[in-house]
Image (tube, rainbow, N blue to C red):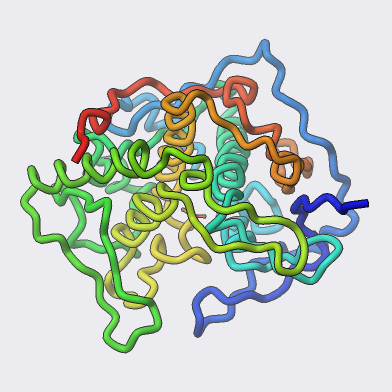
Length: 355
Ligand code: C2O
């Protein structure tokens, strides 16, 4: 009898983890979660309104003030509340630095650099969005997405330059009108002479280079499932793998580094490293765009989806707006329509940019 190799975190195993190779961090919830009741995730009622995620360059003042209000309330909640901004940011720290072990083994669980990347982040921002909406009593509330893949979105969105969305720990030399470098790279974090490489390209060339990169990551270099989704990470000792998909490597990692602060060399906190990335409010529209691109990729490649039950039944735990702890499976997040949200359409400019 073969054991299913589904991933499931052991919530009682939360422990200190490494935020950087030289920095132990403790991101665990303040209270023991062993006696919290867990519910199985249920799809939202289809009679509820669809949440439409819009691109950051097309938001109106009315929307921005709602989001402002929601995030301000979220930031005011105490850390004992799983809906608080700190607890939300710590979720990323927990699952990305291996702070939980898997159930039934002592292997630490990490959701990056594998096929867990897209679905886990989808869950994270989905619950985050529901919580924000409920804090302002608006069930139409939707996160914005930062479309750095199209020319209109290739600078830090204006609203993220102002409170409460502004964040100190960023590279000031990359503020608008600086065009994002989707292929921004740095030497290995531990190297003595750590440095990152500015492309030195003028704005037009940078936009063009970005579009060519997008074409490669979404189309030419991502024809096979595993190239795009990442390697199959299975439960248990030795089940982990290290093979990020095209988009996870770039623009995902590269935009994280590009936004993060040059004053923290080696790691570029906050956005540049897992344990602190979700403290920066720009993390969420960045991930909404990643999430959108997963959907776009499926449309471009005949709606391809992984059918391995080890992936489909891998599950995670997230608090919802009612403070209920949901157990949610990857198979539950494969249709954004069933999750009752959608992305406003933007042109895939990069689709015409074969190198
Ligand atoms: Cu979990 Cu953008 O990283």
